[in-house]
Image (cartoon, rainbow, N blue to C red; front, top):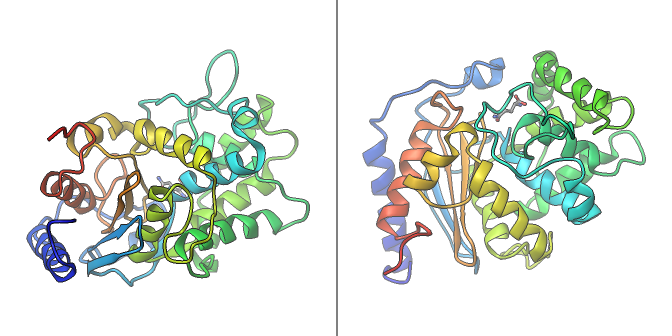
Length: 312
Ligand code: GLN
């Protein structure tokens, strides 16, 4: 962004929002009523830099549920708490090429393919220590809050709906228990996973969470170190290959940034050391990624030369 002054960056983002607003492909997730009822017109784009500048355009202060974007941050927390080796023993780092909710574990080891699909994400949640009921989900929510730089809340409404619609995730939880990845009863880990998906964020929050990753784990506005640099490096690596589910390869060609999406309509993309882009728009493509969000990230990547293969 060195080429533009601050107001020029904002004007540029407003132009991107206006130009992509006519894109009406896809539909909000039908997985739970709270998502199905989302306003498909909502569209926001935010850039937050690793040194704490924030530029925003569109619907950047509306709240929506974090959903699968939570997976990247709970994985980070598990790595930070337990170390890479202990986490790797429970889940691999290989792209699965399957849908996010695929009922599968790797043959032989029984491990989930990676932490960005539901099977791996539920295992990550289980790994976060919980000495007491509700302690784990609070620890997770607090870590997300420190990344966002404000106190984030779990939506009781979304949580109740995730619980009611959670049978496929329960199946994964019990599969993980049968494979010995989760030790003991998976019920509490599943409820905590539903809770982490139900954390409410704005597009601006997402950008700051991304900027914390871009800044090697330290929130650029509050100066607080949430994760160590080694943890962030591993999270961004796995986001690169697995963050956009079965569209990860296409995404890397078109956008070329580590990223994570959620069925709430949010996307975070990170250029390490530089900045994060966050987008929010509820209509999703067949992979579960926001249609306008993917287009906006592609546009920004091209216009601002963010693609990692860019050499000029
Ligand atoms: N709560 C959703 C689930 O677990 C999250 C999925 C997503 O955002 N891709 O199925």
